[in-house]
Image (cartoon, rainbow, N blue to C red; front, side, top):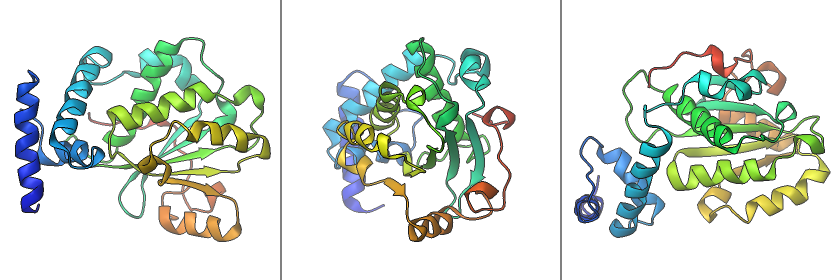
Amino acid sequence: MDRNQEVALTQMRKSVEKLGSSTEGYGEKTLMRFLIARSMDPEKAAKMFCQWKKWRAEMVPLGYISDSEVADELAAEKLYLQGLSKSGHPIVIVKVNKHFPSKDQVQFKKFVIHLLDKTIASSFNGREIGNEKLIAILDLQNITYSNVDTRGLITGFQFLQAYYPERLAACYLLHMPQFFVTIWRFVCRFLEKATQEKMRIVTSEEEKEKFIREVGEDALPEEYGGRAKLVLMQDVAVNY
């Protein structure tokens, strides 16, 4: 860590205290995510950190969302957790053709937290470093208009941006149908520049080869050009 980062961290800790909160129990790598997300501005990073702590206390009082709290969403069997990519990032696959917009927005928000927390937790064994990032794969094959959940997509990305800063390594969109292009353009209006830069729309053979190369054949399921089997998220045990 360079001198500028050390100074910014010290200033951020002081700013958090001024806001009536504390960074006790949170390591440098966790705090750095907030600083990076706010262009190394200690005051803005402190504000974001305090908002995150308040949000976690309200939405995730136990520190995690249990399977039973999101049973309906998990029953659709649309989420798969595939181990680590070539670069060491946990991989979550969403089969969008198994998803339908939720009538219960509170449960859906808990579901987003559950999938993000569990994906991140799958990359460590009970000892979080603080700078873990995930790879998301959105498989849009065979989707119809009934699967389209613009609100859900926006909610997911807004949660990532506001409460999981610097947690996304990359998001790959596979098999995007023509009718979804307009929807995706609308969703992108809600994405910060840093998030947009992590989006990868895979269409050409060259892009498919690059996708397989970047993620790694050992973790990718066979249907995506890899050697692994699909593993349902609820079949994976993690230590939070």
